[in-house]
Structure formats: structure tokens, C-alpha cells
Image (cartoon, rainbow, N blue to C red; front, side):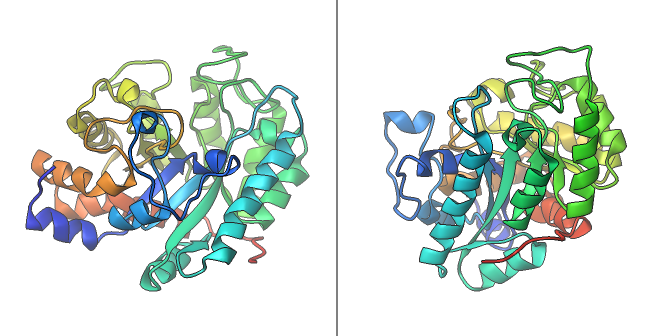
Length: 337
């Protein structure tokens, strides 16, 4: 995609943060994060993020999801902990290229040093195995986002889609306790994947800004996994952000303009402080054309400019809004390596 000098300069001057990528799921299987991977037929569903393409695309910071299976085949907490240590190990091996961070100031410091920043987000509290202390243990190793649900019911909540879906039930007492513990630890509550009732209850209960790390919006593409205008406003009321996904089926088409439409709708409903990026790269998705991997992120800046969004709003969407949330919810227990 060709883009103007204005778009190039704006992108280079921006802090760019993606709220959700599943790269650690593949690093468990030997994926080399520090090698540039070429696009292949399989790149439609994986191999979207690596450090060289983060650098090419101006991606300042990536939130890496901790993905675990919920069906009792081994310890989900052990799997999550292993992925945490994978990211820390990668950063220790290449400190000039990657830093594990928790704070907005540390993202900027990493960028000034020429390194990419990595943050950690839990995708579903089934990984806690019913123990709040496991949340504290992950927070001590840098957990920054805590997703209440994934594709299955768990002791805290029910999913928007997936096994055990129940639209009539909201948060359990354990789910409420998790939100309270997140506040104590300085971990941001993530409402991706949770059903609508639980979503709205969690937004009301949280004393801090919440995020939706990766989603589309029903005002553009009305599917069950996307969120509606009331949910957008509920997030905005907390001072939180909605990360817009790049998956074609969520945004309703293969054109990059579909992602722009979801961002634009989020800004219209929730305000310019509410929209963010939540690609879901490496999460077995097929991204829209023009956003095939992390290297393509300047194309989104160009498309947002072409749609008429003001440069200062685009900078908020690219990363400024996430930085504000991180500043509003300081992490309190991180034990840096």
C-alpha cells in the first residue's frame, strides 16, 4: 500500500501498541521470535509477529497473550507460567531487542534504546485453576492484563461464544474477587471473550479502567463475539479502551477499510480516548488485506488519515490511549528479572 509522507511521519512519531497477539503459543513450539519470517500459505493464520517485523512496522509494544487449554489436560497454570518465562528468557537473551515491561514509562525507555517492549496478558482465568494466589504469582512476573474468559466457562464467568455459554449468567463470586484482586495488584481487567452480562457487571465493578483487548463492534459487524454500543460506552465510562481486531470475519470483510470503520465507530460511540489496536495476530486468524502482519501497521495509519481522522486522534488510537490506561493502573508487585 502506498502512503503519503504525512502518514509516514505520523506513524514514525507515534507510540504504537497492540493489545493482543498469541505469539507465545507458537514460541512454545519453537517459533524463533528474533528471525524475520516470510509470508507463506500458513501465514494467513499464524506467523504474523516477530521482532524484525515489529521494527519494520514501527510496533513499539506488543501485549502477548498467555493461551492455555481449559480441559484439564495438564496444568493450565503451569502452561501460563512457562509462557511467561519464555518471554522473559527471550528478553534476557536479546536485551538490546526486547524488554519485558509493565509501565508506560518503560515502553518509552525501551523505544529510546531501540528495543521492542513486551507485556503479558492472561487469556482466561481458567489458567488460575481456582486460586487467587496464582493471579498474584503471575502479576509478580509481569502480568499486565487479566482476561476473565476465553472460549469456555470457568470459575469466574461464561464466554460470549464457546463451550458452556450461558447468556443468563454473569460474574460468579470468584469473578468478582478477581476484579478486586486485579485492582490491588495493578493488573488491568480485560473483557475480551466474556458474555454480555458478565462484561457489563465487570465494567461496573472495576475501580480502574478496563480494556477489551481484541474485538470488533456490532455497530459495524453484528456478530455474537463483537461488542455493542452499550458495552463500548461501559468501557469508556471506566476510562478504558477497546482494541479493534484485524480478523476479516470480525470486521466483516477483507479490506483494511473495514478495520478503519470499526475504529471510527468506537470513536463515535465511546469518544476519541476509547479506541485502540487489538490485532489478534498469531491467533489463528485471517487478517484483512493490507494488515497481513506487524510490518504492515503503517498502512493502518495511512488508511485512518484517508478516512479523515485527525492526526492527534490517530496517535491516541495507535497507542496513546493504552499508555494512558497503563499510567492510570500502575502495576504494584512486579519483580523485574
